[in-house]
Amino acid sequence: MTVRAERACATREQILTAAERLFAEHGVFAVSNRQVSEAAGQGNNAAVGYHFGTKTDLVRAIVRKHIERIERVRRRILAETAGSGEVRDWVACLVRPVTEYLAEMGNPTWFARFGAQVMTDPVLRDIMIDDALSSPTLVEILGELKRCLPELPTDVRAERRDMTSHLMAHVCAERERALAEDTPTPRADWHGTATGLIDATVGLWTAPVTAPTTGPTTGPTTGPGGRTTSRKGSRR
Image (cartoon, rainbow, N blue to C red; front, side, top):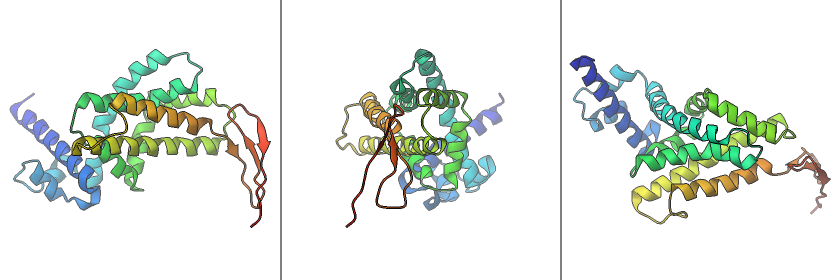
């Protein structure tokens, strides 16, 4: 690599780091490219546009940098879980790669808060979801969850996948924020945070499914074992 190329790579990394921190702390659209350039120590205020293009392109670059690293952790955990028929094991494959990665980066980190900011934006959210779902390991894990929970309707499965994404994003962001501000956290470490997330997410995926209803009487409810029950409401 030439000196010029090395300098360009270093500049890109400085911009990515500065942008991630500013977006995490202030929100993506509250931060200008000029502010990112200044925080990255770039005298040229057009540095962000030169190296990345639009702000959306910059967000995508940040996401991909971390997704690629998380993917390496997920491959290892996936290999250790191969053959399991337990919902909890496959939920752990979703959760622990992220929390292990955040733990490895030390403190402070900004990726969890950055991810939570991105997940609240309807346009930028698609970048994070699309890049995540392009992961072969994530596709395999979701397939294993389907195998473990074959009775879940397709729309409910998609709904619970989205719920899982938001739950993970915001729980991790809150712990990351507390660590950065040196305030108390519910769990002692990232491993404990993952355990709590796994407990809650297993409950989410195995919760009963209530059929749609238009009246005061609720429809049949299907539990994770496929058993159907019914419940009646009351008029007030």
